[in-house]
Amino acid sequence: MMLQNAFLDAFVNLFADSGAIMLVICGLMALVWFFYEGVRRGWVKPKGEEWERDKVSRALKIIIGIGIILGVITLLTGIVTMVMNIRPSLAYESKHGSHFDWLTSIALIVMGIAMFLKPLEDLPLAALIGLAAGAAAALLVALILPADFIEAANGYVNMKWILFGLFALVATIVGVSIKFWLSSIEAISKFISWPPMALITAAFCLVQGFMVWIAGEPLILFGG
Image: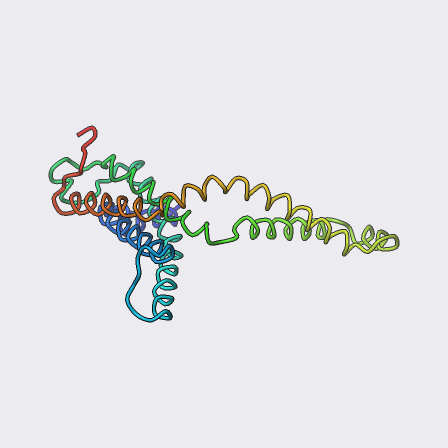
């Protein structure tokens, strides 16, 4: 319990206590989406040779990958600020009191989910989860079955083939199911990263974040 409280206190001090700053970071990440998708679709053409443009694209892709971790942190920040009623900035507290801001917290939650989901369109996540599930099922069966049963079964059919068949069956079923479920999420991710939408998102996050951080005034004040 003490470790849990210490972890929560550390998280609040590092992230949840600075919700407005986190939203500014979200805006910068949305700009990365804009430039990455713009370069990939040919809307934005950085100057330089072809290999230099490839380096720019790879660098942006790495930053987007880091967004998975940042997305989790941002999502937790939005939730913690609402649950623990934490103000997004000192400037906000001086004007509106020590309580969370609805617009900032909700924006953090939405952006956290978006940053976590964005890399999914470039990762074979369904296949990876399916392979992991198949391997786990085969390993579990191999550990549970008694050694005597395995020896007896080997007299009729090699247990390795049975375990391989189980692995393939579970991997296929889980992979197809996850792929079907992820299709809607990937559609949302692609819409959010669409350059015009990414630019609008970046503008909102930066304006809202800086206004709350510096001026203590959100774009829209709910329940103030």
